Length: 178
Image (cartoon, rainbow, N blue to C red; front, side, top):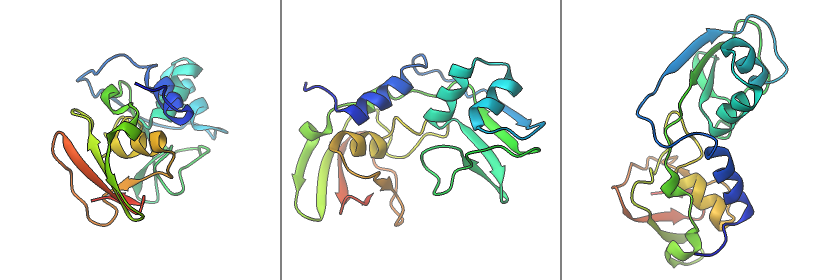
C-alpha cells in the first residue's frame, strides 16, 4: 500500500488517540458555568479531563453544543460550528468515540470508475457511509475526500441513503454520495 497522504495521516493521528472500538457510548451533559474562548477549554474544565483529551474529543467530532434549538457538532461538519462557548451553553459529549479504522486507507487504489462528473469507489467493509454520532472523522465521505484530495464530500445531502456493508459507492461531481 502506498504512503497515506498528509490529510489522511492527520485524520488517522487524531483518531488513533482513542482506543479500539468500544461499544460504550457514555455521554456527558453539562451547562457551561461561564464563557470560554474555545470549546476544548470548556470541556477540560467541566469534565476534569486533560486539555489534550479535550482537544481530541473536539477534533474527532464527539462534542455538541445546544444552540438555536438544536445540538450542533462543534467541529468539521456544521456550516457554522460554535468556536467559542457562551455561559449556559448545553454540551453533549461522547466520552468514548466509536472507532472505524478500516476507513483510513488509500482510496486512489479503490477508484473503480470515473469521468468528469461521477466517480465510483469500492467501500471498505466496516466503514460507515455516514458519520457516527461520536466520530465524524472515520467515515467514508471524510476519509475518501482526504485520501483523494477532494473537498469534503457529504453523503445524503440530496436525499441519499445508507449503503450496504461493503461494495461500490458513487461520488457525483465530487459533491455527494448517492
